[in-house]
Image (cartoon, rainbow, N blue to C red; front, top):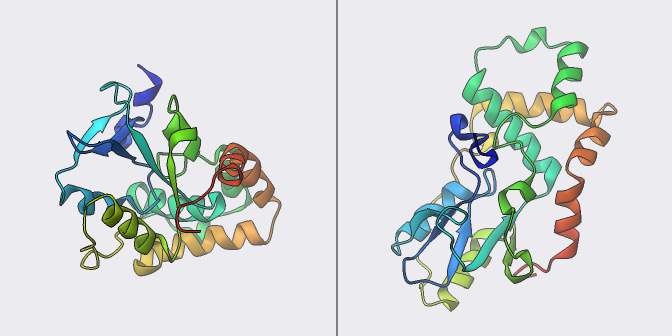
Length: 205
C-alpha cells in the first residue's frame, strides 16, 4: 500500500485537494484547518476534488496552516469522538496518557501538517493562517481572484467547543498538556510544522 493511502481507512488520502477544472489554484485539504467551511465555498464555484499527486496537478497551492498544538487538541478530540466516544473518561490514568503522548498521531486529524504538502513546491503557495480572521482573509482572496464574496452563510463545522463530547475530550487533553511534560513531546513531534509556519508569509497579515 502506498503511503499516500496510510489514512485511507480513516477517510483521507494524502494529496487530496480541490480545484476548478480550468483554474490556476488548488486548495490543499489539511484536516482540522477549517476544511469543512472552505470546501463548500469552493464547490459553489465549481471546484472539484482531485489528488495533486495522482492527477499530476501543477497549480498554485492554497494552504491553511494552524498552530500545531491548537490543531492537535482539536484533532485528538475529533479522533476520540469519532472512534472512542463511549470510552469512560474517568478511567483515564497516567499509563493511558503516556501511550497517547508517545504516539501523538492517530489519524489524519492529528498528523503533521507538512505531510499533506509532500512533493509540492511550497515556495509558490499562498498561505492563510487559521484563526479569527481566516474566513475574512480567504473570502477577500477569492473575491480578488474573481469569485465574489458570498460566504457568510456558512458556519464552521466540527468545532470542538460546540459539541459537548468533543469539548470534554479537548478539555481533558488540554489539562494534561498544561500540567505535564507532554507539551514538549507534542511540540517536538510537530517541529517540522513549526519550521514551516515560521518560514512563510501569510496572506492578510
